[in-house]
Image (cartoon, rainbow, N blue to C red; front, side, top):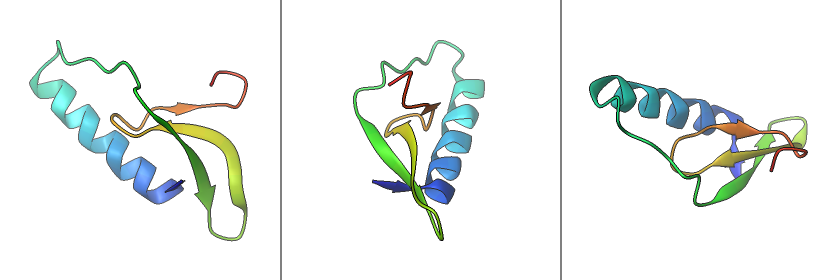
Length: 59
């Protein structure tokens, strides 16, 4: 599982890396369940490599 704030940090880092290397790609090797304080599981899945969020329907 990954906290929503950690997922946002991961996504921003990946976007910065992508700016430096536009050919960088991610095949989303592992999707983690996202959770938030006060809510618990959000239902979304987050790629542990690039931070891209996927809804339950997309994952």
